[in-house]
Image (cartoon, rainbow, N blue to C red; front, side):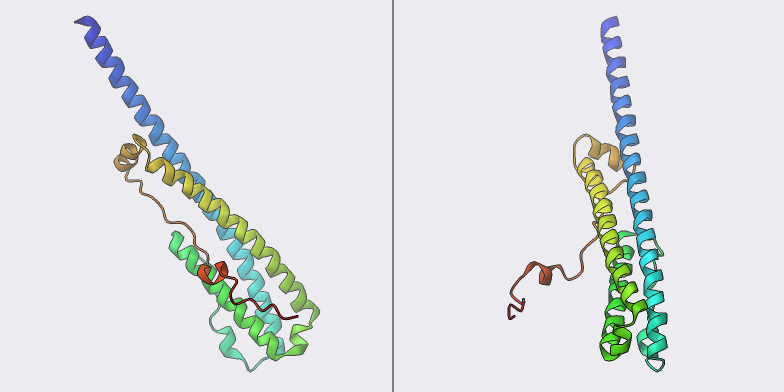
Length: 184
């Protein structure tokens, strides 16, 4: 009988230890996701600053085109993946407007400052894409843990739910090569 109590106590201690270990692991993943989202915020903020500089340069060439400058990008406010996706989309829309304006003003398009900022946007797009991959990688690790038994029980006990991934804008169009212009 004494051995049964000892086995029961050891089994309970092992279960508690595993629960604590899984709980700590999930919380570490949440910290990694938060850290990677902050790095994404930094990339978005840098891109925002560059867009603002591009707008200043464009304004000097097109003072009467105020409509193109009224919808300046908002950075993340809530800290959710959805708001990150919205911020990225808003910045992409602002960049498209600036480039469309540059088409209307050839002297703007050939301006050394505008060309430098255009190169900077390209570099920041690469950094933003890398930050998105890191965030999604960390979310993937957490989601894999959450769907695995017995960690799923620990996640449920800690109210940790699967997270949505950052998305790519206009992905269906980018998957298809049907609309490529092959004329030379």
